[in-house]
Length: 543
Ligand SMILES: C[S@@+](CC[C@H](N)C(=O)[O-])C[C@H]1O[C@@H](n2cnc3c(N)ncnc32)[C@H](O)[C@@H]1O
Image 1 (spheres, protein in one colour):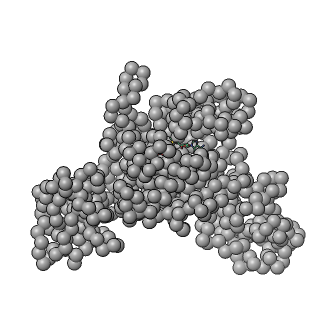
Image 2: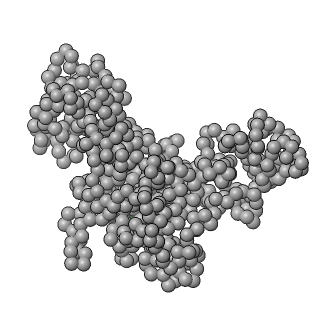
Image 3: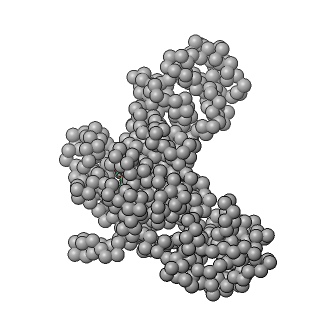
């Protein structure tokens, strides 16, 4: 397999391992709601991804990133941050003097390589990464991703038609960009789902399917300009299949007494996507079995189309209107944030990626978050299909994270005029920033680190697994095989392992690995009791 080399590569290949772990600090006044498990982190994604590692190693379902494309156009700051002062400082530190001579491609590759390695480690075995990119770096990125994810995990180079008219590009008008997609391993079911095996989220007598609302959600269409598509559908509420779907009819009767109209959440008249004739044929032809009604928790009825395998084959060219970059700008305009962030991705593009994962749960990570389109896509999709997906967003620039990303997520959570869900999506997020190193070998332990921070770190470095925080029973943090792990961490210097504190671990059989500031027990005693003592911070393992 060809391997890409560039100036500075040797300095960054192991940089992800050399970086110190940092502590994430929640900022309550910038957060919305409680216990949402959605995160917005302000800071450099290199440090943020490393800080997430003990909590999310091997756990993330899908990574979507839209990094700087490295256009060479320094004026276009958000899309082209390779020469930003933060990246320059970082390169000088990591690559050293050599860094001064790097060309823009070397710099971009140095910036991306350690970040992609961290993203790979965070991805679950059945996860996938999608990276937006254009002609400036697509060739380099593809070889680099081959190296990091493995050639055999390459899934697709998707062409996205990002605008219709085209921007002047050499002598041709450029109308597309790319998304590179790699799976973490052969366990990723992404493409089997698309090819049509049984991994679609719901099942019925005819096989597997996913569902999509029959109401046309585009506000440009409604009864006012599509009167033929506005008609009542009648539902039989007394019958429900195992997916909770009820049968329906176009005629009202005792059996079908409930009338459903295509109304949006503000009770305004929109319209169906299908005419009455097509709907009637589908209802009558039971074998196609494509439309059904479902009662939501709120008691209102909605009509759904069932997507069978054949109808959802994703193609590698995405040219739907929802993919056009301008749509992203219009969406930010509705949020009143148009002037604050240029060229956001359209929500529809990211929704399509999320839907490809075929899972209504899981963690979605965007470490070049910008205006937070990924967060909006997750919140809206959850609201629409009752899913429980979570997001983690990382944004470097404070002004963007605070004044654009957080504001956008807050509005999507609470609702705004013209929104898909004007009443809001009822999902919040926690705003965090990065707060210094967790520890260093000189004996420093961050006084702001919580018990969970150190516990997750210890467990992760010992077991290569993330810690299930609710299972912690201080000082017990978790077990793997016949070994159990303990942490005494209540203020520096106070944590002493002696006969009395050892009793707190006595119910555990097998080997007990115990972290504390010091021990008063000698080697012989520890060995006799199957205890391995490790001193914080000097004997903390490195990752
Ligand atoms: C092209 S924009 C992403 C736009 C985003 N997809 C959207 O729809 O709004 C890239 C973003 O990554 C951010 N960024 C650049 N380098 C970063 C880093 N090292 N860590 C975190 N964010 C970074 C930039 O500030 C910018 O907001």
